[in-house]
Length: 329
Image (cartoon, rainbow, N blue to C red; front, side):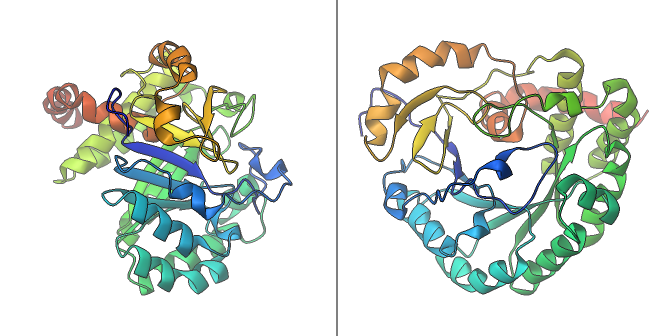
């Protein structure tokens, strides 16, 4: 690879846009094309990646997820590989899980849960959505998956469910992540931010979550508290607390091997079927969009925030003592 440019450490890879859910905050399910990324494309990923999120659509609509994981592991030997799933296809997951664990014994799973049984079914518009998620989590635990977590997407209609979802993760000893609704012309769809609640209406819930996470003796929990606190301020101000690293530390690849600066903006920079990653990362297209990404405030999501936090970790470390004081008031 050409050494003129630092290569990315994180990637968000959509292995298919096909989806079996009908989520109110996402239009991916409206896609109807057969669009599984060919396995050979993963052979061209940069070895610099330290985090790879395999997502969809719904990844387990693919019958070859173990082969996808194996290909990514080969190309990105130091990467933490994460599969983000809605958890509805528990039969497919159970069928493939042994082979996935052979390909990567440390595989990470993140599963969507937006509230209790009634609310989760209402948001995902899939019968027995909650029960299917619980079944999948049980399967993952029995098979020995070490890192399991829930992703809760905050909206107007489920704002009162945050505490119950967090309490579930604590009871089950699994991770909790919070997202707020975002727009994306190349991924989630447009006009989704209108589903966000009024920040004033959820302040008490964010304050509660912050205090709960700061009670932990685990520094990772403090980092999550910092991220969630900044999520609230982002809702208030529409300003990122840290600059975006899209096109520097992060990229998005759709199932057709199109590479974008990120999954929130229509900023294409190349195609991994037709070009090497080196050519894409050093392209004129990337250089054109890079200044726009550096000034962008259109999201605050953990996938782009993670590398920004790492890059500016002294800022976070400086904030934590004050956060501890605040949580004890």
